[in-house]
Length: 342
Ligand code: NAD
Ligand code: WQD
Image (tube, rainbow, N blue to C red; front, side, top):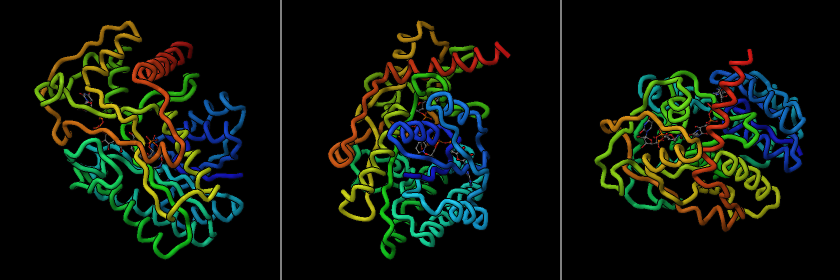
């Protein structure tokens, strides 16, 4: 069975392709490489023995997107990862984010409608919950004010799919990821942040390897057990597997409506300082960090209630914080070794 993955050259898309292949699916990818290269496709080939075909197409271009669907009429579903995802960039360039993330979604839905593709899985984000204090968050927790244009594109994306689903037969699943981290255990694929990372784990590994002299812990006076913020870090392979399960669930017609939403988190809140301690423990590297001021827009704490995904999808996150850090570190080391050997 063939699946079309958008954003297949990116971080979560590439890990999901590996999981899909391991579960017997064929995959084609569409990625304009606006935020990636084809490097991760090489890694996928080394892990699985399969070379994924990527259509280098901007999904904001309807004609080009249509041509991909025309050539792949036999797909059983679309998993739509492609989007821009950098929060501060979205604050600086909101129109870029609204245009890219929403036009691409509308174009994908137009093609899904025209070619009668039965199943659709969408990458949403815990950022749709905004600044909630109602913890842990369940899927029915009311959505708060979006804290950035990026988060707003996810709220609007969810609404677009909901409105579409009212009048179309497509079966959709919206997956709200918490904080995806780590890399495939082979260290052949992982996260490739462009420029200075905003996210905690690449910042930790890049500082530890010496790409950055030091890093700041944003806030140490929050009302949490050690004063730093709490997040629900989840291994990217656990996230990847939830996509395979979501698709299989739709193919097996186990869904109770044509529009379902699932949180993808471990359910465990981890502080920034606990994440750093876990990293230091598994790497043996003493991290050079400073306690600094709060980062504007950060929520104090957020973590998931993941019961629905466990119950309905039969999904279970398996990888703990130390292995999240271990695989992220192995990936960072492999990137350095690759540079040194060239
Ligand atoms: P990524 O940047 O690594 O991958 C996204 C890919 O989409 C990139 O390869 C990029 O080139 C491609 N792309 C973007 N716009 C495109 C367009 N118009 N046409 C074709 N290709 C396009 O990001 P990721 O971390 O793999 O995230 C995947 C999805 O998950 C995104 O929708 C993101 O918003 C969502 N998400 C990510 C996180 C996270 O922390 N990584 C958390 C929650 C949700
Ligand atoms: C985690 C914690 C920081 C860097 C973002 C998006 C969200 C989702 C996931 C896509 C926070 C602290 C970080 C650093 C630090 N993405 N930190 N020093 O902000 O929870 O979520 O990524 O949908 O939408 O907003 O993730 O990794 O940036 O931060 O102390 O150098 O690490 O303050 O407490 P965040 P993050």
